Amino acid sequence: MSSSSTHDAPRIPGVDTERLRHPGPVGSDGGADSITAFAAGLRDLRSAAGDPTLTALSFETDISKSVLSVAFSGRALPTERTVLKVVAALGGDQQVWRARRDALDPKKTLPATASESTPEPPGRRFSLPQTIGIAAGAAIVAAVVTSLVWGALASPAASGVPTPENAEGPYLAAANGVDPMRTECKDDAVIAASEAKLDNQVHVQMMYSNNCLAVWGRVTRYDNQAEGNSMTMRIWPMDDPQSGRSQSRSDVNLQSLYTPMIVEPDVTARVCGQATITVDGRTEDLGPMLCI
Image (cartoon, rainbow, N blue to C red; front, side, top):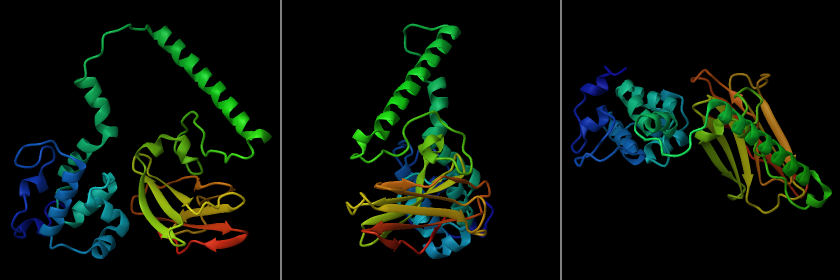
């Protein structure tokens, strides 16, 4: 893909071709790379490829325009899938851009940095048995505290306080039907698509974790009418709306609701979602569906 004819096209004035090709320090001052600089490089690459519209890029890459807009704006680091598809469509070098993105991803750089360059602070060292004992003790304390918290929330005395979603607990493995907030998938999750509904009183969003290749839906209301009303959201594979992997969730008295996740290893496949809420017993359809 890096040999695309786009590479042979004449570059527009002011475009730093070195920044388009090489990760790491950018700019004349050799400053460290950043998400803002990364997005600027993507915009330069887009300009050098003839400045295709978001609609054209969305059709070419099968990535929603909202996700592409975020990638070019620098508001967040785009997922590896998004970077590779966009760079391929624009005639860039996928390996170079993947390496540049990885260097900006804390999930991929922090462990190596900590082990290679950060000296271990002086202090007491624990033996392996001591370490295991400390970890086991901490797990027991966490389990007891979690049980007490949930017990208190379930009591009649707490009936006037909305139950917080997804109380802390041990991480679960990513799988279809699993609560994303109980997994590590939430750590790198990004808003892949978002729509404001009912005069901006409700937001419907599709969340995506690149590390887990997982998708889930989220609906949040800002109308101060959560009490006594319900929210429902359903997500499904676009090519099989009745799939057994489809997920849905309904609940009452919540300001924000997440669906269970769908794990989709096929990066070319799309997942869709749609939500409804009730207001004073009246059901409001928050369509049309969102797909990523």
